Length: 204
Image (cartoon, rainbow, N blue to C red):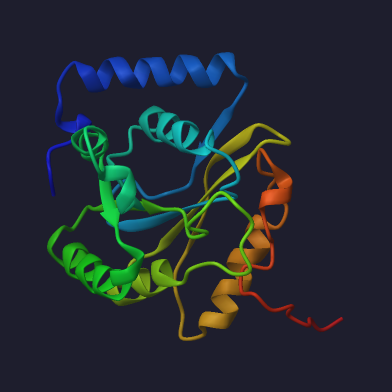
């Protein structure tokens, strides 16, 4: 993988300290149930505001996670491109998302302690359903999914649950939906808790 801020001595220690201070002063509590070693894919939700990105970055630095994040390819155009890559960014072109999934699976197979993060909603606006590329990435790479969140109602965030994919994608997606159902984004109206795009009837 490419050189990032995590590989920059001095700077990374300063940023970690600054991230801790910002989170402390703003009243955020950060939790992490992810394993100390091994590869996994982080998904972050609810994604409802531009503030989610810097908040997520601050939490990752505070937890000393060497995370590569996946973002829209348009964010990497122009002079901001090198900076976004230095932060650990990996551009995603939705038009070639299937190839990106395959490439990600291959990358995980050759990097035993790789952590990637992605916002499955793909936008900070409300969506009918989540993009499922993240699930196929984790399933294909045989790695767990770390459920990261920002709950603005309690000011608690971080990685709250690890999920191993099964042979039942619908059940796994329902479990993910249930985890995020109680989480409140900065702009609640921008989040649709029915991430599969269809109301699931449950047994009483």
